[in-house]
Amino acid sequence: MESGGVGELVEMCIEAASASPETVEKWRRQRRTLERLPAQLADALLRRLIHRRLLYPSLLELFQHSVEEIDLKGASYVDAEWMAYLGAFRYLRSLNLADCRAINNSALWLVTGMTSLKELDLSRCSKITDAGLKHVLSIKNLEKLCISETGLTADGVMLLSSLSNLCLLDIGGIPVTDKALSSLQVLTRLEHLDLWGSKISNNGAAVLKTFPRLSFLNLAWTNVTRLPNLPSLTCLNMSSCTIRSIFDGDCKASAPLSKLLLPGAIIDDIDKAFRGVEVNHMAFLDLSGSSICNFHFLVKMKRLKHLDLSFSRMSDTLIEQVADVGVNLRYLNLSNTKLTTQGVCILAGNVMNLESLSLSHTAIDDTALAYIGMMPSLRMLDLSATNIKGFVYWQRDDLEKIFSLSMLQNLSHLESLNLEETKVRDEAIYPLGFLRGLNCLYLKSDFLSDISLHALASLSNLKFLGFRGAVLTNSGLLLYMPPLTLRVLDLKGCWLLTEDIVSSFCRTHPHIEVRHESVQMIYTNENVSAGSSPFHRTTQAPKLKSKGGKLSQAPSGFPEVAFADERIKYTREELLELQLLPLSSFALCDPDVLPKVLRKE
Image (tube, rainbow, N blue to C red; front, top):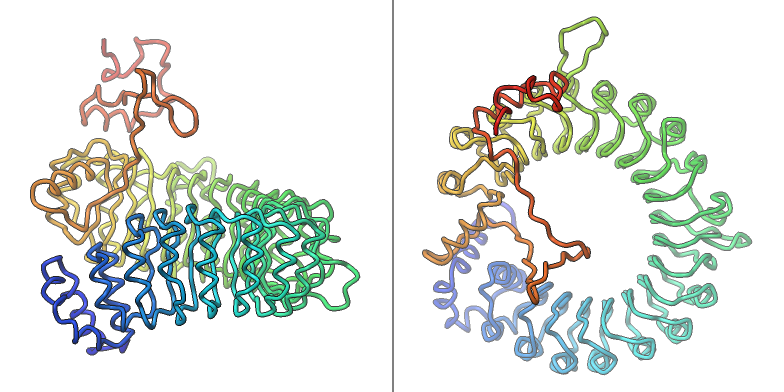
């Protein structure tokens, strides 16, 4: 779609055409005009109607001569009636029905013979079996087919050999056997193959060398421990596999892998595992949850841009092996590792081009911020669940606090900052005002109050603000002047806020999506009385019903237990007084030394 005034005019037209059921009804009768819509505009209008849930089966008929792509992913209401209309689309090239649980075998009969269809996604349509697949086989021009986690069997997979034009096939989560995979050797155009969760063994994997164009392969959660040489392969996923050797070590030509995903993989001998892999091409490496104790192999990966070592054994003593390849790194995830501030110090100066850094759930403290401030290209920084307090004492005898978040002020490109579940208090928030480029800020702490929220109003480019679990009062919210750019305000866990105040804020700022426990109730009430609003809605967990008078069970198997928040016993003023008291200043076992506000009968 063209940019500038023409694009804006088209957007205004689409917006007006999809404003309400009444507007849809007005232009629905203009069949000739709609049939002449260019495919690009018809696709855009249809997407908007789907997003706003204004589309119904008979309305599809108006698009059957113009639309080329339809995405109904997750639409549980799509059934055989919808498929009857979709089957009449003359120029439909791509159809996404993933997670449409109502689609069954008989519904697929209605798409038989759609000669224009090139891409079909039926992922997680569990009612589709081998019988339904036979209808799909009539679409001879299919190039991309996704049928993962359906009711297909290995016998059904063998039928796919007749779709000779396939270049992408996703049959993950299906019990594909070695015999079934062998029957697919005729699909010589395959470039992308998903076999995760299948029953493929090393013997079956040997068949993969018969696919000369294969560039993407997913074998996660299989029993495959080694692969034949696949010289065209550029992306490989062997998550949660036990790996002996990724490729046979005696191969003459190494696979030019650029993307390798091994999260949760068990690797006994890292040198043997990487034998046969041309690591010079590696740009993306995921070793999260790996048991590897030595990362010396990284030194050869000079082109590495994305490195995920979360939940691994990475520590301060091993971080130098990451620093050695840091010059081209753009993404680095070290969350849930044994890294400390010392390790961050080693990284500083070696990752000058790093754009995304996650240190969540590590033992770093405020001193690390000085080294992080030396990473000038950072755009995303995750410091959640660390020992960050927001201030530091450079000398032990110095009682003057230095606010550590000010050390990030040189990160002029920083767009997203996560400080959830840290120990940052109100007084330490002010330096964040220097981060004018921030788009997203995530805070979650009961150490924060109205003061912090008002201080953040100076962030003029903020689009998302998480202020969860804070001691935010009704007056604090009403007096808050959000930046004009703010679109989402997450206040979950701010239990002092009342429904009427949250509702008032929503009416005052209708362009902001507010997330709070009371919002669902407000949205429900408005929906019943005056129609629903597209804003101010949150997801709500389904309630479990009790059977036979017994306590209902949560999905985890544990009984649901209701906890009373002890803070409701105190007034807001008393809570604010308690917040400023150090926990070590009194002994809870002796009621005589308790603060006055705690001496309640």
